Length: 393
Ligand SMILES: *[C@@H]1O[C@H](CO)[C@@H](O)[C@H](O)[C@H]1NC(C)=O
Ligand SMILES: *[C@@H]1O[C@H](CO)[C@@H](O)[C@H](O)[C@H]1NC(C)=O
Ligand SMILES: *[C@@H]1O[C@H](CO)[C@@H](O)[C@H](O)[C@H]1NC(C)=O
Ligand SMILES: *[C@@H]1O[C@H](CO)[C@@H](O)[C@H](O)[C@H]1NC(C)=O
Ligand SMILES: *[C@@H]1O[C@H](CO)[C@@H](O)[C@H](O)[C@H]1NC(C)=O
Ligand SMILES: *[C@@H]1O[C@H](CO)[C@@H](O)[C@H](O)[C@H]1NC(C)=O
Image 1 (cartoon, rainbow, N blue to C red):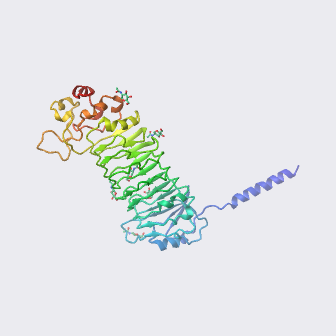
Image 2 (cartoon, helix red, strand yellow; image 1 turned 120 degrees about the vertical axis):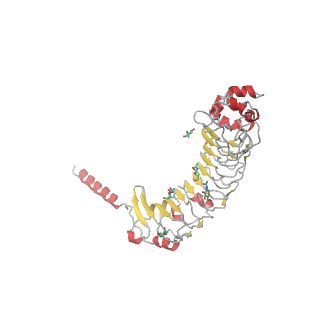
Image 3 (spheres, rainbow, N blue to C red; image 1 turned 60 degrees about the vertical axis):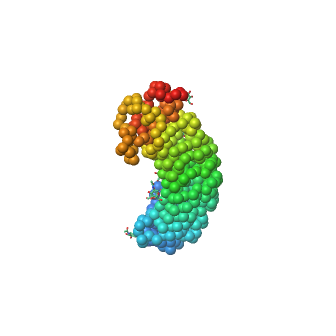
């Protein structure tokens, strides 16, 4: 009868002991890792090494004796204009035995990343952020061994090519601001988990046919601020209708083909503002409209700033201005030709889009910022005028 409590108390003290014995994370003595600074935040140990000037100094820090070498984050934020910041590279040995879940290295002079630099963190790294360095070489092919890596940010570097992104795990890839960036034909063929790709401001002039065709989970694709002139067949096609945000604004797109965009979710936002689209023919556009649905599907075609030769009845017929109600003042483009009384047009809102105006389902998809050349908002166009003026409806 007396044995049980004794065993129990023994067990309890043993348990307490073993809890005490588990290594507790703790920062190294501050003087051992200067000029880096370690802190213990709620998620783990954070090592800020913005004070290091060059690679030898950084490598020196990682020769210190760390009580625990598992860090949550490594941060190096440099000022690219500061000449005393001369971190040009990271060698396979630079980070010693330390492991990280997140790395944020910004504004340094680093030119290339060696495939082995983060070897020790293969199973722990979740996010690698290298925005705003001078990286022209990155080991995309060795990503597949990083089994937890979901986010790779390489914006505003000088990468010339986006080669095969080899990772079954990667969800977010941001390469905006690397220009010009050549995106290889099969770049995304081996990265099936990608959900978000940012290719904004990378001087794309055209898109490889089927570039995104293997991706069945792609939610957000940003192709804004490029030099695309047209969207050809199969330019933006995903394996499933997964796209909830597609941005092709600020290009020079004047024409799109019937099957250029396939993969919009019904609640997608399609942003096409600031292109050179002048007509919305049923042949080219119906397929896009049919992928979207109210109440969440949205098409933003605001600010098509470029002038095209006249067409469409609103501009060709003098009655037009009286018929476009409410008569807001005409929007004149910056390039307006003062010798002509008719303002140069963004977008004629002519018979080419009667099929939209006469179908409430389609018309409701426009943002209220999408306007005709006359300044009139597309969503307020009067179907009766189109029935009256357009021969084939
Ligand atoms: C440049 O960086 C060094 C080292 O981090 C720092 O001491 C110095 O104040 C910086 N200079 C400027 C102009 O920011
Ligand atoms: C990296 O650090 C910069 C500067 O603090 C910050 O703006 C940025 O959001 C950080 N990136 C990530 C992915 O945490
Ligand atoms: C485009 O990227 C360059 C860096 O390559 C940057 O200087 C510029 O501000 C970016 N432009 C936009 C509109 O984001
Ligand atoms: C892509 O990068 C640009 C430039 O930083 C940014 O403005 C834009 O919001 C990003 N796109 C997405 C979908 O996050
Ligand atoms: C769109 O719908 C999907 C599911 O179909 C949902 O996961 C997502 O949150 C929705 N997105 C928006 C922006 O409403
Ligand atoms: C509008 O378009 C939808 C989708 O194609 C179609 O189902 C509907 O019948 C059309 N409505 C009219 C009035 O034409």
